[in-house]
Image (cartoon, rainbow, N blue to C red):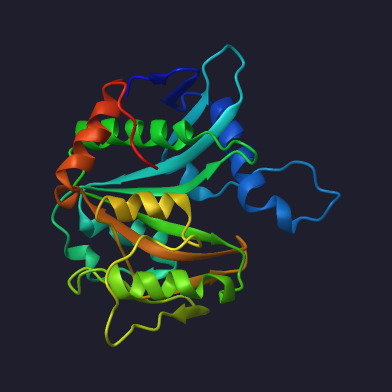
Amino acid sequence: MQPLRKGRLIARLAQTAPDLARAQALRWRAFRAAGQGAAATEGRDEDAFDARCLHLLVEEAAPGGALLACCRLLPLASGGAVATSYAAQFYDLARLARYPGPLLEVGRFCIRPGSPDPDILRLAWGALTRLVDARGVAMLFGASSFAGTDPTPYLPAFAHLAAHHLAPDRWMPAPKAPELLHFATPAHPARVAPPPPQIPPLLRSYLAMGGWVCDHAVIDREMNTLHVFTGVEIAAIPPARARLLRALAADAPESVPA
């Protein structure tokens, strides 16, 4: 994938060991630093999946520019390989194993703390769109994270997801993790409303693309998150949203809402 530029930002795939080290350091700040105590100043979030993945970086385009966001991407030829994904450690993906097309697992998506520029997320989506089109990906999937392990603040968000955004039965992940929270599904869902503010920006983007979620949240104490399996079938993305994403991928000036 060729680098994608927008203003002061550039999105590209990691090419070197130092590139990967920068991504692991940013992931540590985003996912692990809070649980390490005040004395911890730096570290790396790394595991065996890193060697199998592509790593997308969004950074300042100037020489020596700061890394502002990253994620890792695991291409799978079909659903038959989904048991080898990171998400399969936490979710029973037996139904998704029947998926016929190529998949791309998106994981460890994070933005540098204190970097609120919405173009960071938009550029990341433009780069992902390029990769999806180049590889003929039919589905994106991953685990969308909510900060912390206390579900109480997120109950309105989980109720909204249960009412309006559950996965089709044919792909629905089953529970597997030892600690989880099942969503309470309303008997009579209210009219679809905008996602409540507790839903993180990345998951909002997935939902705007017609994405769906499983019916429970995994309580992941190692990563200090609650996470929800999320899928986006590329063919189901609304046409207007698909046009905007491809405009971003082509360096066009249109803006894609985050």
